[in-house]
Length: 110
Image (cartoon, rainbow, N blue to C red; front, side, top):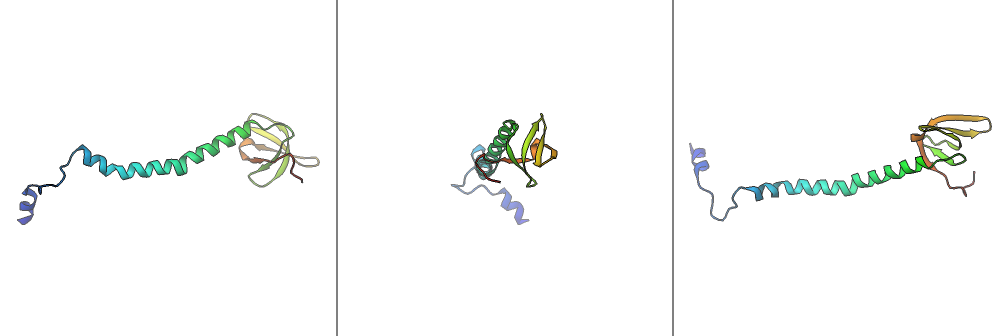
């Protein structure tokens, strides 16, 4: 009985009226969270993936590389999606290009 009276009561003077402004202010925290996630998580991850793609495209015969499994070797042959990696004398393995973690600097010692 009293709840129906409370709903029928007019808004207090000075209270903000519902409308497009209040809808925007309710979504503002969600928008800010998305912007923060974009700059702290999504953008750096995309930048790192782009650098990795460029590194994979630049691999050539004779490069010293490290696989994601931790195998050190020298590139012997390069195909579109795979490469032949020499890991010891007379030992070559064929691996996918995507599994190359890094190209080692030429000045690095064995």
